[in-house]
Image (cartoon, rainbow, N blue to C red):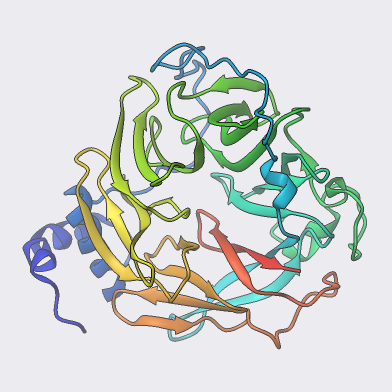
Length: 385
């Protein structure tokens, strides 16, 4: 085992207390992850179990930081983001463990399998649905959903149409159910808001990009923040705190309270992959120190304090967490897992040659974005076509 850093040693006592609060047997890796979480949040809390959404809407009808933005005519040089989107697929598989506890992926299925942009997957809180961004034409994207009830990822290709899946589908409706319908605008990065029957997404309209809210039925609930723009990516630390990648000459990471409207800049030059660290109220992001030195760091949204976790794979910024505290990251067509105890290692079952389900008609390409279900049993991987 690697010697703990001075910061880690300061939190050993806290980490041991955290580990005793768990009701299941924990491995050495779990305890080390709890220590890391303690350095960021000073406590270790369990993820909130999925439950019924509250009766009252916790967010006001208008943003707390100001009046709803007015969206005027698009600039003459405006080019929708969707116009430059690459052709990508979302692959879904089972995330399992070998006898020695290492991760493996089984049953990879190309869940979208069409020419066009299908990307930015995010699981619902119960893991029974996958939300994602899909290009409906060459200039517009919408939010779509794939149902995963029953646990058979081999069946997701026919989720909407009953069709077992063929290559070159003409429309995204062949693979998923459309959630949003916003002619003249696009949505990106759909994410279920903790404690709500609602999604947050980046709403792009006429050259402006705001963090927006929609019901899971697609109802337009309006902007969450009025003064934060242009938002590129985001994640939720808790039911009210959002971390946002904000574009600019120097991109910034900003933390906003959706109830009070308070927004603070906490870091500069972050990467696009922002996540809540499982079991905590901390956020992780990639800090690009130099062109070739990138670190995944943890952020305490309440204090703005950060802590380095691990250096990324060279030139890679997309990653995801497992509930046990591993970090998953792709490099070309291979998937790697990092743990505090073991460092980086390749995850079997992802890089070609790999056994695919019969529903998959295309070979998997290079990996970019990754999502893991809250219970850690499913994985969604974005791959180039």
